[in-house]
Amino acid sequence: MDINNFEEYFDPVILERGKDYYYENKVDHIIQDINGEYKAVITGSDVYSVTARLNSEREIDELTCDCPYDWTDHCKHKAAILYKIRDLIENNGIIKQQENPNGANTQKSLQVILSTVDKDELIRIICDLSDQYPEIEKAIQFRYSVDENEVSQCKTLVTECINKEKYKGFISWSKVGPAVKGAELALERAVQRLEGGFYNQAIDISLVVMPPIVKMIDFSDDSGYISPILNEATEIIKESAQKVSEVESEQRQEELFKKIIKEAKNKRYDGWSEWRHELLKAAVAFCGIKKLRSLLEKLLEQLLENEEPDNWSSDYEIEELKVLQLMLIERFDTEEKAEAFMESNIRFKTFREKAILRALEKEDFTKALQLCEDGIVLNSRLPGLVDMWKRYRYKTCEQMGDIENQKVLARELLMNNNSDFYPIYKGLFPPAEWEREKESLLNELESKDFSSVYRHIIESESETSRILRYCQNHKIEIMNLYEHIIEDYPYEVSELFSSYIEYLSKEAGDRKKYQGVCKVIRKYKKACGSESAKLLIDHLKSQYQRRPAFLEELNKIK
Image (cartoon, rainbow, N blue to C red; front, side):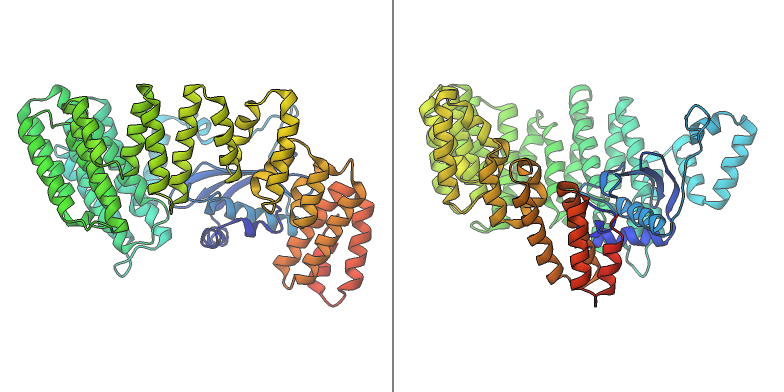
């Protein structure tokens, strides 16, 4: 990734949000050290630390952020710091951290600064900030005061934060973080209660967090905040329910069971059934009490009756509900009954997988293989599941010590582009046999139009002549593979780079694409030297004199 064209590596929506952060001056306290590392604090719905390290070619070697976002490789905070860095570079901005004569960083952390302030001054600072930012006062009061009805207090806090961020009945993506702040604080309190052994309160607090947050899905542009809140709430409820079932009276268990079931039955979870299922899993903890188990079983049957068979989404719901039924059987009934239930629902992935694992545990390899073979036939139109059953088939042969069938199955998985099976397959052969087998394998893969597993093998084995042919058929790959062949084929590498750059230049028509061409030229310079790169740049300048933006980007290459 290059600082000049990092945009192409970001999701467009995330990129736009990062650009907004940059233009809104939310990239604070940015410092740069002598090694090309930039650090910044980015303030949005929360405060996050972001680090970017650039090398001498202005390529981004490292990019990290401590925010919880994990939907794609890069978050909006990373985009924001890169916009800031590029702006500073283009405008010759100089940002240097202060150093003492010994080279130590003299910039003090907030914790160090506050530790030197006396109590009265610290109180004054907090009160002043609270006047400026009322949410600080509310957070401090919630965290350190004791309310006689903390559940009601938590419910109020959650709804107030949500309502505050609504505009015309909707919450935009930039406001979702602040909107769920009350829920985050409430769940912090729930965790405290769980860790302190106050399991009832932990459940009650989590249950008042969930309804407003689930409703919020319908009127907000979520940016990855809502699901984690609901996931944490259900995890607290499940863990607390298990503890309650171990220490509380049947009466108290029944009270909490009914609360959880009442929430799970609510129509707000129609369409968001994953959290309904999690609540029902929590209720299983109380089903050592027969009448409670009977109530849960009846509810599961009712939910199953509402599903339509042979419908993809309904099949998912049916499987999840049947998994809950199995949980009850496994927890409170015999192993024979659990196995019979699995057999009756073997068409579902979860049950087939459990059955295979049980067969392997009992070393019933014949049954395990049959389950795998039947799964391959049953799910023939679902490549992901077919691959899964083939892997279990291999695992079965491995556990049996059947080397010959392992070889057959491992090769079959390789031919389906499962490159992780390459070292496994290679390990099945003695070194004297492997070279011949490798040639046979690569020749067959070549006939399959250079699959990705082929690329993985020739790179792993440093098959330079094959790597060269591969790059000649897939010119873009010279960017990634040149290091493997530059020593043996310097002229061919230069030709491949030049040809690829010529093609990209011809197709480029805007600054972003010109920057992409220049990124490849920088890689070419690194691979083949400054003189080769200079000759090519001069040629491009001559050929594209009427593209001033391209010429400008070419002139930036040092």
